[in-house]
Image (cartoon, rainbow, N blue to C red; front, top):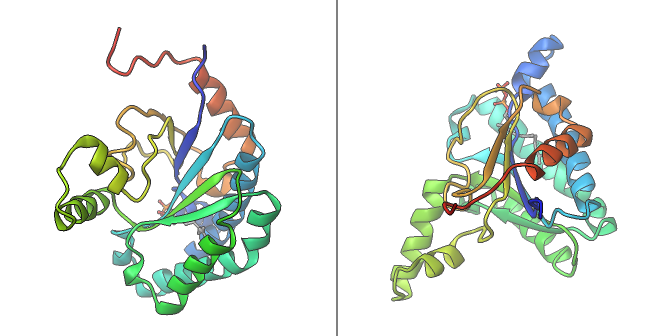
Length: 225
Ligand code: FPP
């Protein structure tokens, strides 16, 4: 039986370089990138085999970027959530945020929670957006929760205390670099990794399907023979 891409996770990289190529300010790449988020999410929601799609939108390290770029990304996220809520509902997509949301403004946190609540009844794709997310931070927070609740630290308990408990089957990074950048380190323990030079604003559902086709032909042994 071939592999199924039940949980697909993507490191969306290359927005800045895409904008540079077009001789545009970096933020134009993020704007185009947000359109691609919508297209890939819609494609995944209609895909027979994908159940979860996790996208890395803002890392715990991204606060180090220039203030104007961070502010632009916050506004873009807020605009995106307001504008795309109907796309989630039309495609039966359940939205979840993962990461430490406490660093965002009160209004952005409220909008994120509202989007989760409004889509809570949706039974199709689970769409996780990683926001102020870092895998080390996620694991530390999970361990602290277990300690505070006086629970034994087992693999199962830690797994369920994470923001995103499902294992990743297929992890893709766009933009040409070959690293994980603190993304889903626990959940991707046995993920197949695919790296493409395509910059995120140029990534298409067609390329995603071609990566899935290659993924399906890989033999996954999970440490066995
Ligand atoms: C990496 O490109 C991308 C990010 C840090 C942010 C990802 C954001 C988006 C795809 C758009 C916003 C998303 C939503 C959901 C509204 P980079 O800036 O590091 O590119 P570079 O490596 O070419 O500089």
